[in-house]
Length: 309
Image 1 (tube, rainbow, N blue to C red):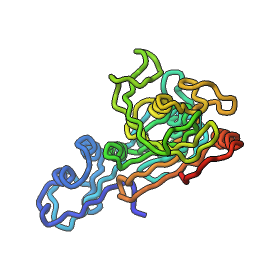
Image 2: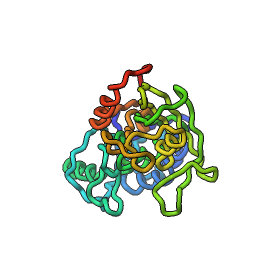
Image 3: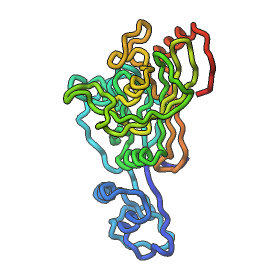
Image 4: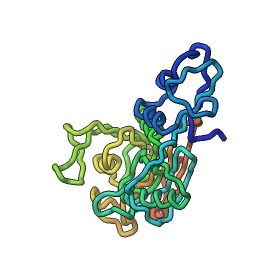
């Protein structure tokens, strides 16, 4: 497999005589900020040797950019919490976040989050990679979280999200059922009150779009696949309530459920193009036990139809 901690460019005839800095700007996807990072951290090699970015190149020269050249310190407290790793290389770490875990440190959660566990793991391995969240999940939502190990990978994955190349899909269990087997919910979302956690659909809110597909229907529930096109806080949860099929167990937007103690929502699949090696990636996270158990309870009712997720 190609190295995932570096970018490589072979100088062409039309670039002969140019400065490395010009080639990095014109021929790579590196931002100006990332070029500064590699410039000041000995992250640029020419034919395997460290050089300054004002060096002039010849046709056939090989320029290598070391993406993890900067040893990044962090004030995140390392905490020994088990991690379920779905994928890892020198560019990124993909975790299956359990329910009830906060994604990153915030007030009242300074040492018990996913990133605390990631820092501990990297320290144990003697590594000081960067820790850059590509996206986060609500505390009670489980599933895929991607941590980039340098700013370049984080930036490129976020750009892929804006271009609908990076696609993340969720599975949810609902109270009630969608009227249609698939559809698009296009309804703006706003904060309910200035300091409230709760969100609502409101005409003056931010544009919010969610695609859905019913995987299986039951007497009073459904298993639904969601793809949020935009990324608003609580977007899937609010859109489900708006369409009258709120998520099972969602204490903020639905009534309590005796067999599901949190919102039944799981980020189970992600697609993207690897920003370093340019390979298509597809990563899956298995359904957590609480949702699998709830689904088994619901399946006491006879399914009316079925599609593969």
